[in-house]
Image (cartoon, helix red, strand yellow):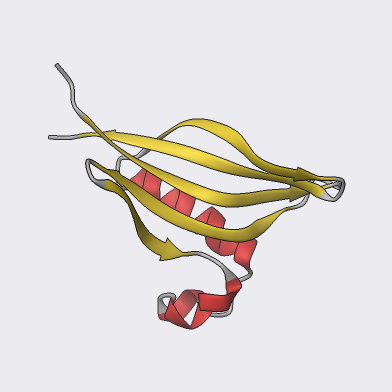
Length: 100
């Protein structure tokens, strides 16, 4: 039987005009003993990003991380609404990849 590992990006937002961004976005791994925060993707931690990504917008960095997960073999498998306001919606994006 195929085995999987899972991760999630929280706080991926779209505003009322459909613009992509973040609301305290973070990347977590799902583990047998709970969640492990792997990376804070928000602008408040931009100084921790790889050198070429320090000045990129929060939305641009989230897009980069989603693309990088795909290259690393993670498949996007779903989304859920994390919160909703009149100004927009924050989503969680779920990923999985097979365990070799």
